[in-house]
Length: 121
Image (cartoon, rainbow, N blue to C red):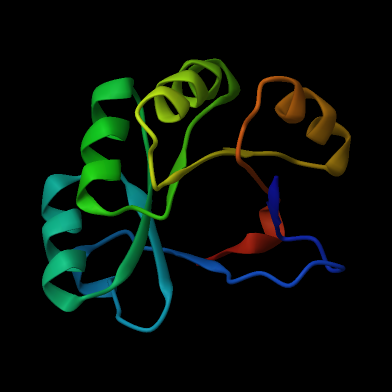
């Protein structure tokens, strides 16, 4: 399991983008699933991760080249199965508040845990 945001573990921060203009090459961009944002990231050759609301968004984001697909724990449980079955390149991730949630994520074979320190505005 990858862990982002823990001071003991080296990680690349995720930069939250609220507009297409904030998408930048040379960093890991994070945004809610939006086809226009994905197009912009692809045109710029920028690495990106998305926050997904459903399995369809996750499938599209993976095919487009997302690094992380972030979802709530309920959706992530289903996504982990889909990702394993279809050999997603993207990692399925869940935002957590503390390391006490790692055991639950491991139980459901979630690929990554993202702590609050990992996300930059």
